[in-house]
Length: 449
Image 1 (cartoon, rainbow, N blue to C red):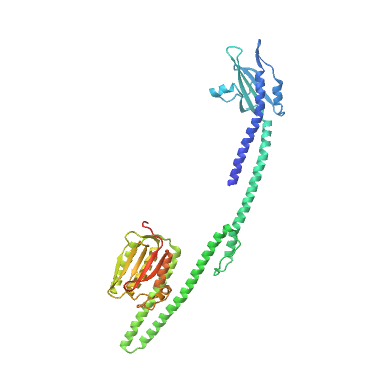
Image 2 (image 1 turned 45 degrees about the vertical axis):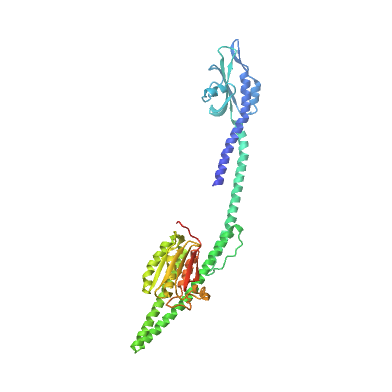
C-alpha cells in the first residue's frame, strides 16, 4: 500500500509537472506573439489601426493544428478580433500595474474548446489622457496536450516499471524472509510429541536468534520433563515405603494380643501417617510451585513485612516445641521482584527446619540486612550440618545424618528452587557457638517499589 501510495503521488506530480512544462514552452511563443501584436497597434489621423504582424502568427504556426484568436480593445471599446473572447479573472491593483509590463496567462473555454489566453495591457502615451489598449491572444491546447503527453507517458511507464519491479522484489524478499519460519513450522509440525531434541536447520543468520530461542525453550521443556519423571519415580518409591510400613503396622496391631505392644504399634502407625502426610504435602507444594514458576509474574515485594508475617504464623507452633522465634528487620525497606506465595513457602520450610533442629528452651533468630549485601539470615543452635553434607541436603528426598524429626527430604530442595527462581542463593554456614546459619542472599533489590 505504501508503494502504491507513493506511485500515485509521483503520478500526480508528473501530471502537474508535464502540464506546467508544456504551458511554459508554448507560453513563450504566445508571449512573443502578443508583444509583436501590441507593437502593431498605432494611432493615426483616422484613429487607431492595427497592422497585423505576419511574424507573430508565424511564431504560433509552430503548432499547426492549433487555432489562434485575438481581441484588441481601446479604452474598453472593441477594436478588432473576436469580441466574445473570455475576460481574465479580476486582479488586485498591484497585479494590475504588473500586467502593464508583461502578459497575464490564464486558461478558459471559448466556443466549447479549452484555450490558453494571454492578456497584455499597454498605455498609449501619444495622447492626453493616455489611452489604455488591451490585447488578448488565445490559442487552442492541442499542441500543449500533445507535448504534455510526450513528457508524461514515458514518466508513467518508468513509474509503473519501478512499481512492478519493487513489488516483485518485495514479494521475493517477503517469500525468502518468511521461508525460514515456514521451515521451522514444518519441522515442529513433523515432530513426535516426546521428541525434544534441538532443531538443526539451515536458516539465515537473521533467523538464528529465533531458532536459538526455540531450542532454549525445547531444552527447558526437556529439563522439566526429566525433572518431573525423576521426581515422580523417586516420589513413588518414597510413598511406597511408608505405605508398606502402614500395612505391616496395621496387620501387626490387628494381630497383637498384648495391649502395651498394640499401643506401641498404633503409635508407630500414627507416626508413619504423619510421615506420609508430610511427604504428600511437600509433593503438592512442589507441583504448585513448579506451576507458579512458569505462570506467575514477579511483583514488587517488601521482605521485612513478609518475613514478619511468616514469623508470626510460625511463632505458636515454635512455642509448642519450646523454641522462641526472634525477628530483626532491616534498617530500611528491602524490595525485590518476587512471588509472595513461593517466598512464603521457602521461609516456612527453612524456619520450620531450624525450629525442628533447635534444642528446647533456645531461640531461632531471623535477621534481615542490606549491607554488606542484601540477605536474610536464619540461625539456630541445633547440631548443624556437616560440611560434606551441605550440598547434598538440597537434593530431593535426602535426609542428613543429623535429622531428629520426621521429614520428607523435600523442604531444602523446594527452598533452593524458590531462591534460584528469584535470582537468589542459599548458603549454609556454621553458627556461633553452635548450630547452623542459613543465608539467603539476594542479587537484586531496591529501597523503593
